Image (cartoon, rainbow over all chains, first blue to last red):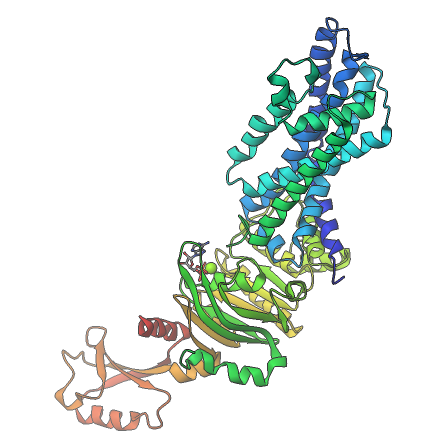
Length: 257
Length: 326
Ligand SMILES: Nc1ncnc2c1ncn2[C@@H]1O[C@H](COP(=O)(O)OP(=O)(O)O)[C@@H](O)[C@H]1O
Ligand SMILES: [Mg+2]
C-alpha cells in the first residue's frame, strides 16, 4: 500500500457510490429531467411569452443556467448527504472508520462521487434545455469551472449535512427549507436586478446569488454581480465547507465515541 | 506513580518478547462522553498466531476494547500497538493488518456479496482480486448467493458475509466480536472450523464471547474482563488446572437424612434428596485425601453403588471469578 495515500480506498468508495447511482438510475436521472422539462413548460413557455427579454436574452434561455444550478445544488446536497448518512444510520460506517484511510480520502471518495453525478445531471439538463431553446455559451471553460466548483462545494455541504444529521427528517429538511428557497431567491428564474430595495440588498446575503450570477455570465456574458466576486464567494464557500469537514474528522464529531 | 498491580506485572515478560506480540495494549482506559468508564487500565499482550478469547458478561467492555484497537472508538488514556505500529501515529500500517467482524449484523442492503467485498478490499488498500474474493465466498458457502442482494440473505448468511468482508484484504489479525450471537449450532461448528484453519495459516485471532464453551473449544489463551477490568489472563489449560476443581460424586444405596457425625468436617455435602454424597477438591493440592475419605465413609457404614468425578468447566471458573470480583 502506498504509505502517503490510499488510492485504492478512494477508488473503492467512489465506485461503490457510483454503483448506487447506477442502481437508482431512473429516479436519479429521469426525475430531474422531467422536472426541468416541466419548469420549461411552465416558466419558459407560459411566462416567457409575457416577458420578452432580460438583458437582451430571451427568457427561455435566461432560465437555463438557473435551472442547471437548481438541479446541481439540490442533487449534490442530497447525494452527498445520503451517501455518508446511510452508513452511519445502518452502522456500516464501522468499516470506513476501521480502514487505513485518511479523512481526506474518505471525503474525496464520497464528495467526488456526488459531484460527478450532479455534473452529469447538469450536462443532461443542458442538453434537454437545448431542445426547447437555443443555448449559446459565451465562456465554455468558465461554464465548466463554475459547474465543477458548485458541484464540489454543494457536495461538501451535503457531506457535512450527512455527518451532522441524526435523523432522516433533518436530512430532508435542510435541502427543502434552506437550499431550495435560497436557490429560488438567488435568481433561478429572474434577474435579482429587477428587485426593489431592500430585497435587492437582502439577496446579496444569499451565496447562491453569486453562483447563479457567475454561471449565467459564462453563458450570456451578463451578470448581476461582478464575476470575480462570484468566483471568490464560490471558493470561500468551498473553503468554509472544507474547514468544517476537517474539524469534524479531527474531533471525530458524530463519528467516533 | 501508582502501585504495582497484577496488570503491571505483565509488562515485563512482554517487553522481553516484544517482537512476538501481535497486539500490545498498555494502560488503556476509556471513559465515554456520558462519564461512564468502560475500560480501566487494561494492559494485555496478544501473541502472534494465537486464538485469544476475551470472556466477560454483557457490558464488561469487550466491544469497547476491540473498537479502540480497530480505530472506531478513541481511547481516553493508554496506548495500543498492532504489529509494532502505534494505532494513532501509524494508523495506516496498524489498521491494514486487521480485519474486524463486528458484533452487530450491519450490512449493506442492495449490493451483492462480491460488490461489498470489493469495497472492503479497496478500503484496506488492496488492488482488486476476483479470484481471492471468489475463494473466500466459496469457503463461507456464499458463492451461490453472489448475484443476490444482501437484503435477501438470511441472518446466518449475513454473519458469514461480515466474516468474508473482514477477510477481504487478507488480514494478519482477525477480530470476531461475539461471532456466535444468534447463530445456530451447525453454523457455529463451521465457523470454529474456519477459525482453526485461519489460525493454521498464521492469522492471529481475538474473539469475544459470553458462550464459555466457545472459548473452551477454541482458545489458546483466555482473558476475563468484568466491569472494565481485566481480571485474569491465562493459558486456557493452565487456567483450568489452576482454578479447576474436581468433584467426586457418590451414588448412595440408601438416602441419608444428614451427614453422619463421623464424617463431619470433611467438606462433604448431600445432594439429590440425600441420594448423593459430594466431595469437592482442588486439583492443585498434592494429596486429595480421597483414599482416606473412602475408608472413612466405609467405616461410617455408608454404602454407595457408583461414583464419578467431574472437572469444573471454564464456565464454572468464570462464574467463580466473577463472584470473587463482586
Ligand atoms: N457510546 C457509549 N456511550 C456510553 N456508554 C457506552 C457506549 N458504548 C458502550 N457503553 C457502555 O460501556 C459498557 C461496555 O460496553 P461494551 O464494550 O459494548 O460491552 P461488551 O461488549 O462487553 O458487552 C456498557 O456498560 C455500555 O453501556
Ligand atoms: Mg459487545
